[in-house]
Image (cartoon, rainbow, N blue to C red):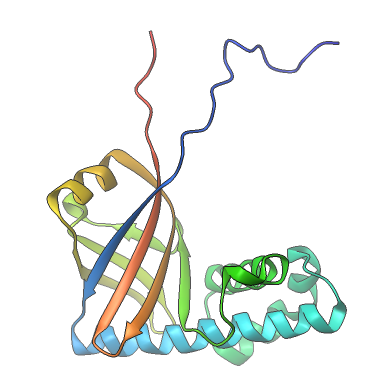
Length: 177
């Protein structure tokens, strides 16, 4: 039997690494983030209800049945709506993945971008792109973040005065000789 790839070129995927940071928000940034947390959570929970009603956890099926309605009802961008549906499908497949009603927003490379030296970032919100958000990290976290590739990030608000961003990165591998 012939394989598609030579084993010399197949390398195991490196484990992802999570970095936790805190956002220092201005009042206008806080308002946009709070609205996005509420809209994303509402969209995710609605998509979960649609999945339960259809008795499916398929991302594609849930997307087909409620994408437009979520965009219109919750005012999310296209990318955030897709992320809310994917999050709902994952919650239906793995119930321990999330708590229904818990306010979170899932970001990916299209909806989150890092600024200079990973000190600031910009996020998609219901109010548009919010830029120059200060990200509090240690020097070691900042180095690891700069050396890796951002896969996704989850924004939550565990307390009234605290916004936590958990960033999952794929560490870049050094080229082998």
